[in-house]
Image 1 (spheres, helix red, strand yellow):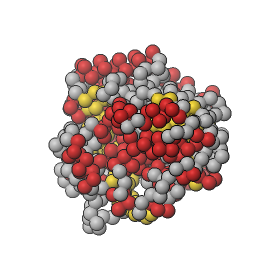
Image 2: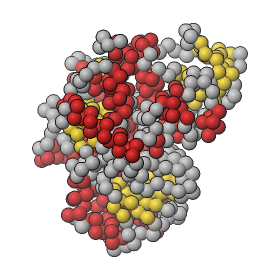
Image 3: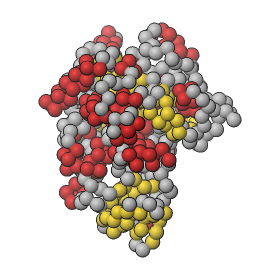
Length: 164
Length: 420
């Protein structure tokens, strides 16, 4: 699988409150509505203009803060193809695989990519192509690959319990 | 080679020896959810199993917006109650005087115990490390999966050792230390690490102060944070006599365990400080921010809403008047009642503070003290992210109960040592 999209670029320590504000945690229930407020307190331009297939590039510790899974759901539902970052906060990292949102840890690519760039990600080959250069990223851990293959945690659990 | 705390607890739960970076699947002893029990219940239903695996291991505590401030919140609470009834979940704390902030309840009701594996669908679940548990926050899907299967995978984390000696000087408390520490190691300093607090400095601290430290673990990226289950803790567990599990065991790291990072601090060197907007690691000593105008003061939350915190703040507010609106929220109704018995509620009211019902209050922007654009608050909570208290054009300074109290009196950020 490979994806190609326009980049929205952000800095270090982007937290879940600015991706999905706490005041919405019990008032917005539908995934489609979550997508409408995605990154509202981070970047109103993103909230207005992000298109399916776009790619988010962040610095270190992307998704720090709350465990709220809507901070992943809103981005996934918005149709964002992947998040590339220098590192991810751990709960967010797990939530992404559980939600089936592809994420990549690749500091070199983050350094090289600018906002608005067109970037291609080849998941099979494990490379990001940006500005004519290739940036390899390591394969996902084995247990995570199983989750991705099944399409996220809930389908994975259903399969495990023989309910799929 | 010795074992770290995380290796010991996860190994005990797995039933075999484990080392850092190994992946294990274990059955958590308790799993806590709050108002988000409702969306988790909806996800649980999608899995297709009829019953939760271990109803007695599930704890549900309504606290994030209580009593319901809107119809949406009320519907959410209703769904939790219906799920609790349908599944026969015994450990439920409703919007009654049995309740309070979820992490406070988990600790005061005897769920948090040494050597247990505990998960919660809230990032501040790491608080229970003050009781010697391996406890960590997980997402909603993961909690639904734990309810259905009773188990969850973990990558055994590497560990960070924080050795603490000495005692705080007057006007300084655990919050000042942890804010300074986060400023030093930064927001990702312990990314996916188990953080162990060692040393006589920790043994000198009350359990409440240790809860403040462990609570803030997630703010520097920790998977979990933990203090040694020492005599002080074991005596408290015995004295309370309300342990909700007999599976607990006082476990601690070996002397020769291997750590990825190690830090040393003397509490005598710590001075009052704050985290400035909009990051928890944006630390400043009080001298640098003194005189900053504030519009609201908030004393409460899972970080600093305990009786010990209220006593420290009341000590400063006694006989004084606050210059700005000051919201006091005890962390549970047990704390509230104790504060009443000790005359603290009178001290707060005489000073002009208002008291709200136990719960999360304004901490994550739901109600009871939302800020207007351009306003600044000083708060004892754990996060100062942009928009956290409701409006993205507002500003939050995090500080200790004593600093918040001193600042409330002056209407500007103030040094608590000058108010003692």
